[in-house]
Image 1 (cartoon, helix red, strand yellow):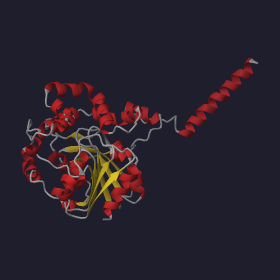
Image 2: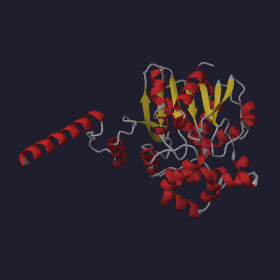
Image 3: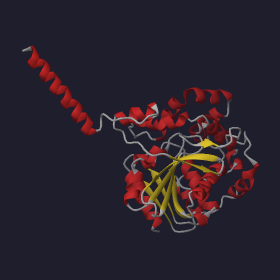
Image 4: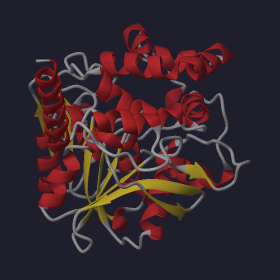
Length: 344
């Protein structure tokens, strides 16, 4: 009887392992894999498996490159405090439609690093937009459809406004987000100022220290308030939060928000670009702007920016409780908008 019990237990254990292997629950991890990636992979949460690196401008950029190499190019830009996995479901949709899809880690995220260890950890908008042009140059991409949300939308807007010859079409969540230091110094209504509480927090040394100490908890709070109807789980958050452990992330975040208030200077190399942006240039490329019906982050009303788009243009409201991180919350709608913008 004892032998029969042991044989049965051994058979059941082997069966469980076999089923786990077939389902992908047991996976061999490559040597040197980061703990965060290993943990999410073992739970079968989709991740971008192939992060490439290329020297572009002042950065060594980490990026995803999926889809046919000869397809029309789409560049997808993530926001703060998120990462490239906002596009984990959008990328295969666009690749299947024949697009070559590039998703870079912005400066201060993931595997992107400064080439000069002493460089200013600059978060000003013109710098981030210049990074996109430098990446396109490094990859020998003449023109691309550019799409994004949050910081990514602002960056995409700037690229389209300043380098329209490089942009085939634009998709921008929350529309026209180009601003200037002078605009950032203008007071808003008390209710509007309250929405920007973290901008004032970052203006203080206490805020910088607090973000450095608690950046993951801080990011989770932003995710929840910006997308109040998005019920993401801990694994989904951890997958993106790993990118915030970049050694430059805190400095770039703080510099960005302090620069907006005129509390920090930028770099002289971007002065001419910022001067042009302060004039609020129109965007002439074919554009689709998007807004989620449950966006809890500060954002302008569509009527306030429609006139800034002078080319082929349309606006879409995405329903169903979609919040700020629109590509991750409504990936089909976002991918369809990219395809539609390309065909305007």
